[in-house]
Each structure stands twice: as C-alpha cells, then as structure tokens.
Length: 121
Image 1: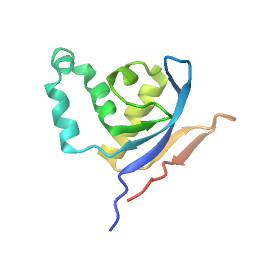
Image 2: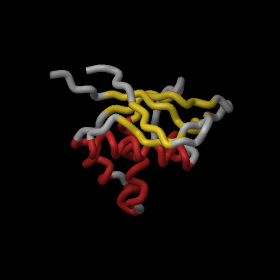
Image 3: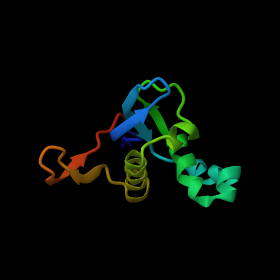
Image 4: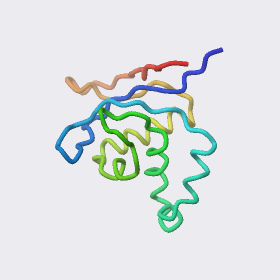
C-alpha cells in the first residue's frame, strides 16, 4: 500500500519575497510526531502559544516557489489569507486525512470541491 505524504498547493495570494517576486505554488508534507512535539520547545511558542502554527508550517512546507529556505520568517510574512489557507490545509491533511477542499470558484464564486493532488508515495 502506497501512502501519499506530499501534496501540492497554490496560495490564494502568494508569498512576496524581498525582491518582490510572488511565490504561489508549493508542496506540503504530512506532519510527523516530531513536528507536533518539537515546536513546544521553541522559546517563542513557550511565551506565545499562538506562534505554534507558524513553527509547524515552517517544518512541513517543503517547497514554495523558488524560495531557498522555508523558515518561520517566511511564514510570518505570508498574507493572512495565505496563512489561513495553509493552516486549513495542514489540518485537513493531518487531522482529517482529507485531500479535498471546499472553496469558491474565482470566476463565478460558486462553492466547489477541489482535489489536492498527491506528489508521490
């Protein structure tokens, strides 16, 4: 049995790097137990538990456009719409095991269900 562990995504707005380049397409992997445990040792998470999703996402996003390193700084600088999208994606993939999303069609605003394609085994 093959298990998909990585999934492509496309951010609604996109991460804008220091040079003004917009990065929308990326890859997220399924979280491990370590991804859930180790961030609790992070000093920022200890003083501000709401920082936990930033650390988690920085660990499980493996690609974002041509950004060399995905770290907490990248996640901190996402637009709120993109950050919320990634939190929802993380929760659906890791807590619910779903690889589909309910969203709105960008053209007609109809509610649609979109499959998140797997990148591999």
